[in-house]
Image (tube, rainbow, N blue to C red; front, top):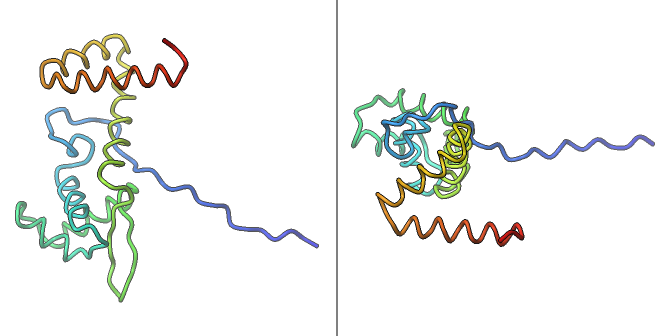
Length: 156
C-alpha cells in the first residue's frame, strides 16, 4: 500500500523588503515606498480585511491618487508578502500578514543586518551616540536589552 502524500506545510511567508534603505524617508517609507507605507498604515488602522475601495477612501484624504493606483500598490504589497488578498462576496479583501509591531521588528532586523555589515564596532558606537543624543531613555533600554541577552547566553 502506497503512503499517501500530504501537501507540505507551507511556512508563513516573511515580507520581502527591498535591500536598500532610503535614509531621507521617514518611518516605514525607509523600507517601503512612500505610498506603500501609507497604504499599509491604512490597512493596519482599519483593523480588518479591507477592499481597495475602503483603503483608497482613506489614502486619498492625504494623498491624491487614483483608485487604480491604490489597487496597484495593494497588489505590490501582496507580491512582497506584506499583505494577503482573499476573495469574499465577489470582492477582493486585503489584510496585513503581520501586525505593526511584528512588521517593524522584522523590518528593523533586516535594516540592522545590512548596517552591521559596515562594521559592527562602528555601528555599535554610532547607535549608542545616536540614542544618547535623541533619547537617553532609549539608551537605558538598549543597556537593559544587552544585559538580558548576555544573561540568556550565559555570558557576563
